[in-house]
Image 1 (cartoon, helix red, strand yellow):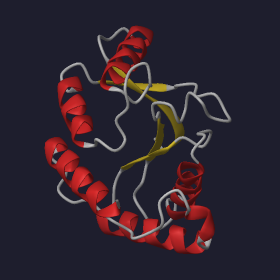
Image 2 (tube, rainbow, N blue to C red):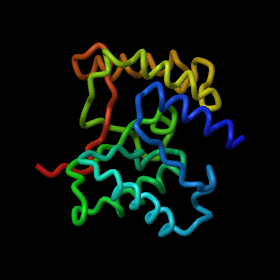
Image 3 (cartoon, one colour):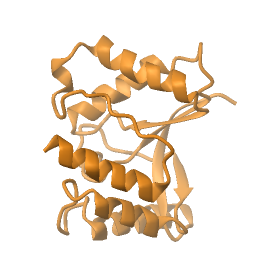
Length: 168
């Protein structure tokens, strides 16, 4: 099962043009079984290596507990000392944010009108996570959300984020 997911992730990453993909070897849907410090250290190591200006992280209010734990680990690892992270944006996961414990209320939008087809192609590679419509994680559901977020921001298609921190 995990081997198949790794293949899907690599295919999806290639479609999106990622230079490198990191696999931490942690248990899927079981991050609550490992010490939080271990997760913090692994994510912190990646932040140190990549040295990003912007960090995109899962939304804290999601239903998926692994995503909430990753959110916390990212905040610990991206404290405003010792790295150059100037902006942290929490992204919206179709179904995770909609069915979550805290409603997703966007404060930033990114125009994806020109790249929506690439996003759909990348998601098509990730068959184990793709569902049938009307599920939000279906190809049609992704299009509907992109159009909804686009209409909120005056664009044809958009992704929405919550600004967690921005240092100007």
